[in-house]
Image (cartoon, rainbow over all chains, first blue to last red; front, top):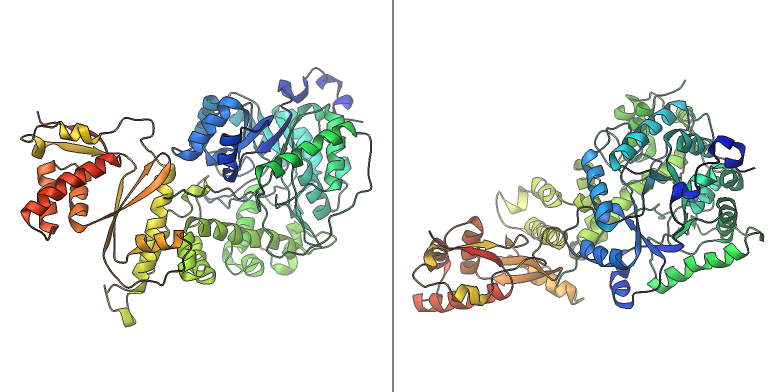
Length: 317
Length: 293
């Protein structure tokens, strides 16, 4: 049973927190800037990495303004550090808010994670223990951020590689209670669900079935790397069948939400990335079909690095 | 025994960012000061999975921490990576990241202090002697050049502003010219090097594999136009002139500084000045001019 159906008092909440289903989008990456400006491909929407643009006074910002004039845009961040015990960075939040207004972003998302403490930033999406203390902490900070941004925050489940002895509940229980208590949205990354399920020995279908579907504003798709003993969220390839299977389930349970493909390493030409997300159309129409889940062959790669890694290289004449 | 969230976070950060790896990280005073477990008891904090031990799972984050940031550093300094070789560059960058870990929400500031770090750790003794120009200066110069590209590329520019054209300069009455002040565009930077690193970078851009050059003074102006970083080689006199103008000096004072650095005749300097100002205006070096009262 879907979570929303088990909570009648929540039935009045509109799906996706009232946000539109933007269709099938692509993560905007600098290597595709020239192609997008020149070819103006028919793409439903773009998701930007907020930190690449909030301070930009150069070409990245110039390109974004042109893209935002033609396409619908969503802001996705990697540095809010909502789970950190360091103070919130209100200067950063003010920049997010300003950019969201300037490019008319449909929503602002980040991750349920922490990125550093004691003033440091690891530039990684670090996991939190799922327990009552962390839940209270996250909910309080989400409320503060939402009040400041004057809009609901949308938070993504990150891929993770450790679990904590101090966890007392599942990730999906934590996400459900967090979203309801803080009244925020969820970005359900079905690739992350799969990666974490392998790394932490849980059933990914139970995760997707259990989150509050009316709060899922957006879905992420991506590729990952199989290291044999664990998976790493590398965003460097095609989406594998077991992840598509989770996507079909998420699509059915949510009634359809904005879907976005992330590709952050070994990035191919734009058409290849766009083609990958368009595969979702077939999975929507075949939503009740299930195929044998075939794990990606193990290709041990000790050098695999979890993304995000977002950096804008300068253009020099 | 349960641990507070802040303790867990400080402990995990100390463990996964330890330069020696996960086990030395767990055993480090910094980590033990937060949560006092040794490697044998780490499952009291991090659970194991069916396939991996707690230490191996932490290793995913530990490996990623430096790998990710070293990759980012390499992207900031592609020419320096080629000059030094990836392994040597990574050694420098690895030391830098331990001394100056990121404290910014953006990776765009990750490399900001790398040239400073290279200066601070510059070997000043032994074969080089104190203060003598040597290979460390080549590395510092090239790092400074590539960092400047990054800052100019995404910093303030003048793409949406009007700039001073050559005709605007020509319209200034000759008698007031020495009292004029020229305001540079915000992206204009002047750099003086011990080694010809700009020429070295040009060869790198042409996908050549240049030899590391010997010491030779080089003066460069960096700016941005149409969102692309532009480079201009300068003579010592041009560097002195532009330097004074950027400081806010009047044109006459700046020309005096240029004359001191100029090795030709007065006539040659006068011809040069006309040509230089015309070229710099065409390149968009100046935003506006301030006439004397």
